[in-house]
Image (cartoon, rainbow over all chains, first blue to last red; front, side, top):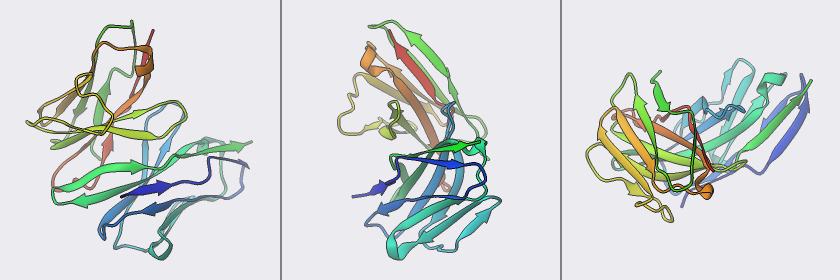
Length: 117
Length: 116
């Protein structure tokens, strides 16, 4: 069975601080995809990153960086120099690749990030 | 990137009425569409998976007669909440994927349904 755990329910940081959002996943598949989405108050899901299970290379995109560690089944997300606009709920998600192609996304419970000016 | 348009973004309806939500893939053909529901301050939970031209597959606990899903074309899937009740009030969001790149999921903007 697949499972995504985001242990941090809510995090508050002061603007310009760095913050790391944790994500731990469980899956029996060897081929899978991991995602991070941002959900601002308006509700839409903003895609941030997709990583496949064979690519453990960490990625940096501007102030965002991701640390994928298969050994610990973790896919953590770090925001450096946080800004007020980063305030949102962030979801980590897992997609397994079945015989017919990718399946649906299994979402973690989300982490609500509040950046205080 | 691919665009998925969901309509309406907000709807308020009376208890007992039915509401239809549309999910369109604007610049690609979606072989598979997923419907999720999100209650306030909770995560997104998959309701059903629909493949074009076939019956939707519902997750356990989701009433298929209450949440009717139609995926009649490769660009449109609809979710109809029949005989809506206040407990159906939620945020509904669709996503679409396309073969062979169906490892990517493109999400609509979501529909906030309020049943009064």
